[in-house]
Length: 163
Image (tube, rainbow, N blue to C red; front, top):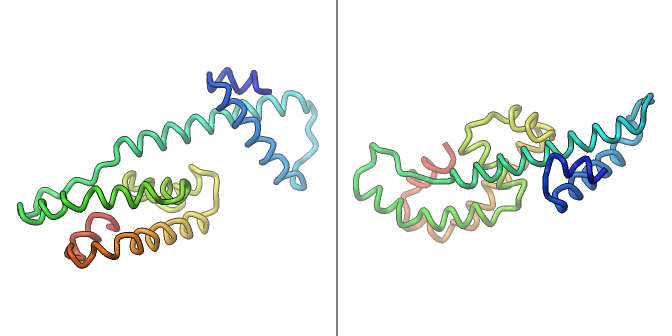
């Protein structure tokens, strides 16, 4: 099964991770599984698909993180832009400190502009999970950035982060 995943991932550790994720998924859904005519074909195709999903999610995460740039809107005054530029590294660090899934969902929502249902479909989770992770991200960001908020006009912070 790792060889099948290796065809897609070209990396042994990613191939092993794909197989592990498949078996976890299989175990979690064991009560809902239907009778399969060709178990071997089902297993190989499922591992192949899991490897593809893993590659897609890692690629999307990497692209989102690389594209991660909070730029000040063009209509801001030079003083506002300077304030933003001073605090931007703290905000980026706070986002980087979020738990992986939380950060990924927050960035998909914030940077990609995806809706809750689009994120849920893309990640294969429930909409409630996306809502909860978004709420957690915002709470953690507020807590971590609280000491800075007295120095930064609140409208400036929230206009960029939470629009």
